[in-house]
Each structure stands twice: as structure tokens, then as C-alpha cells.
Length: 140
Image (cartoon, rainbow, N blue to C red; front, top):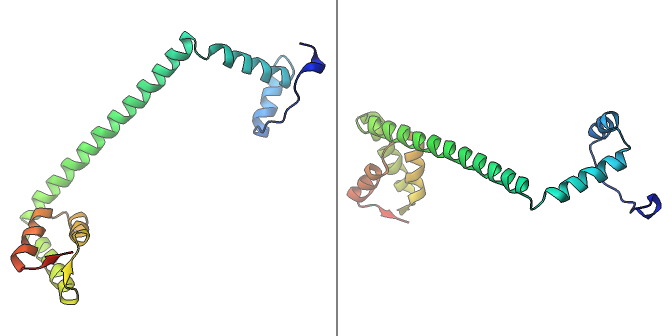
């Protein structure tokens, strides 16, 4: 293709990258961009492209497996903390007091309030539910 038949266009590139590319390239930056685009077009749909996509997917899967293991460990840690707090009468008593104080000013107790106590004090949610039911409080 003749140089005058090429399409003139504007692209936005980080100035530092643009300068470094100009220093490293053995051709003009316009020609460099054109070569990169040709390379990109030729790879798409090729075996290398699919192999690259498989590699990227495997990396994502590995990353997600690590996250799953971290979440499972966090659940185990919370369960251990809940078991430890079940025997800690002070923590349970504090939660019961908070429920009672809440009910002095409200007619029903929202489940979200119990979830907040569960999350902040690491007391088993079933223990809190049982207390609310035993006291005859209503859920909202």
C-alpha cells in the first residue's frame, strides 16, 4: 500500500510509552503500530491465540482456587471463634443485653441486627436466634 493511501487516525498513548517505543523501534512509530496491529490480527483465531487464552483461563482458575481456600480458612476461623465464644459467658451476655436494650425501644427485632452481633462478637447466630425466641421477641 502506498504511504498516501494509508488512513490517518488519532490514538491516545501514554507519553512515556510512546517515547520509549520510538527509541527502541527500528522503524517509525506509525510503522511500528501497523506491524503490531498486523501481528495482532494474524494471531487472533490461531493456535497460539487459543493456547494463550487457555493459559489465561488456567491462571484465573488457579487464582480463584486460592481465593476459595482463603474463604474456607476464614470460615473455619470464624467457626472456631464462635465455638470459643459460646463458652465465653461475658460475650454472650453482652449480646443478650444489646438485644434487650434494642427491644426496649422497638417492637420487633430485625434479623440484620442479629447478623451484626454475630459478625462483631462472633457468637453463633443460632444462639442469638434461640434467645430472641425464648424471650418472646418478634422478628421483623
